[in-house]
Length: 439
Image (cartoon, rainbow, N blue to C red; front, side, top):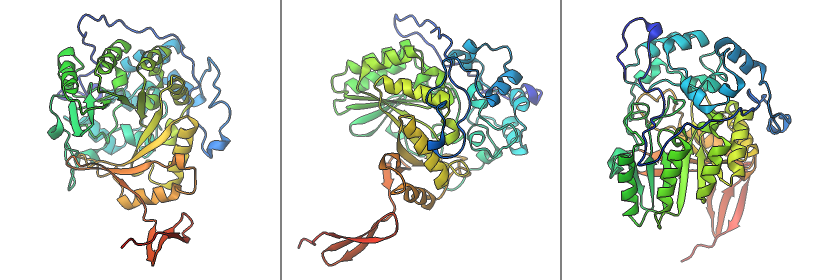
């Protein structure tokens, strides 16, 4: 991290500028030239998913985008062509990272400005132009804005919070590899994200240049996996694995597929939400070579379910990749039944299965994002029976200290009456189920 010197308007929030691109072996990593990829721009209108018009699901090939995004581009990126705007590498190069940029684009609150000028070694700030176009200029409490623009609340460390609350470092046999469960590992391929979430579980390492996807480090992790036959499932995460080039992804996935006992590969990414331009036909051609391959996406609010995100998810699904969403429950962002119901409905229409609803991890400075567990159970109860079961995620707490994911459910078992089990349904009615007590 840089030391903040001089006028605040020139402060650079982090020294990392682009995802590291260190050659692996004899591979030549050439830039991927992405053609103009027209997608409809803007957010979906509010209301029920059934009311969404055909523009969401049948975007024109080369649309101009909605007025909000056009106005944003005209104001701040007037020189960008459609081809540049839809090029994911252009989006990365033009991320909003400086206080001077944010001052032009947002009316900063006192808490936001103080956090940006006094941030020190906190998680870096970085937002793609695309995602910034979805953020409210004037409202610091807008859900999407709260998730990517820091406030001074991040400086307050509450009881039970820790830099590594899940104990990942204690389950790391080699740098960047977490082996917590018997048959699966988490491979942190890099620490770069195109857009940094303020509630990030790995804020202790993400964005600080500690995990570089070079051949030496990755080989140690791959050798450990190859020498541990119990491992059948590998999750690629970070950072965001899709911030790497197609060539690098191909190299890593090829190496994993050469290990006989690795049956299952997953990729965790937020790109379809924050940089959907990354999901190119070239990327999908690479990924589809390595089936069975699954993908865990990260959506937290209905405003992220834009036509661009829909098209990105459609490309992945059409490539045969099952998609699941891992949503973090966040106070003031999605902590009510109507918002969560709208989110899960839109995800299903984008061919994404709501998979996990995470209780926000107790990372340092996250108390302003965490809800009570009772609120999470209330949301699950507000979904179960009131919408299709496919739309109801598993509500889990990732137990502090490395205990793993623990599922939570509302209590639908009322009790017993002789040989009958008394069960409560979604309407609050009690039903009997024959369940004789075995002596």
